Length: 271
Ligand SMILES: [Zn+2]
Image (tube, rainbow, N blue to C red; front, side):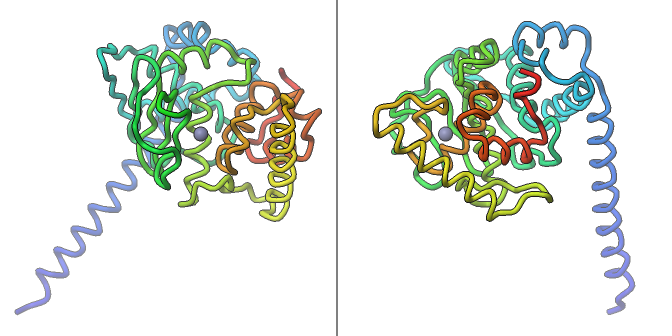
């Protein structure tokens, strides 16, 4: 049997894969360079007012990432919830705000599942594959390399209120960033100018301090829920970084500095 047909077939397969990768990259670049429509901008002005504080130079980046997110992620609505563009846009904008100035991307997020309000579950919390929020009534959950599940009621409120220290979309997508390493453990992929030793020291010092404050009945600026474990602490600290940046910088300056490097943002300066 001659090898020629096999070689030709192998070349065709390789050529097809190269062509597909080039097409995907071009599509991604095109989406990242595409601005939102005026209608989408007006919708976001109403749904996620915190975007007004974003430095103007980052606005085109955010809009491109929102377009990429909306292209990549399929939304499903359950329990009678009627899926609308404003839901997709609000979730996409809040998720992309986290990484507006960072090179990381939600590579593994393909689906977002929306429920009208809190989600009932009988599963135990943190079973190794999924991180739940709450006991049996959840505002959201994040599956490693899987879907993000959200209560639309909570996601909407999170976008509307930018400084109450709670944001379920940012919280669940912080878990997604954390899990990009393959382990959801409070140690995400760091930037080139960050050391893992520096990250661990700042996070562990702040976490231990947080647990003590919660145990002593104090109300720290970071949500007490973060005392559960390191991955929850990373998620709630991330939300605090965006929603109460000045207070976080005042109370936990080393942690703030690490998050500022990770996200390449300094929200305390533009809050
Ligand atoms: Zn969580």
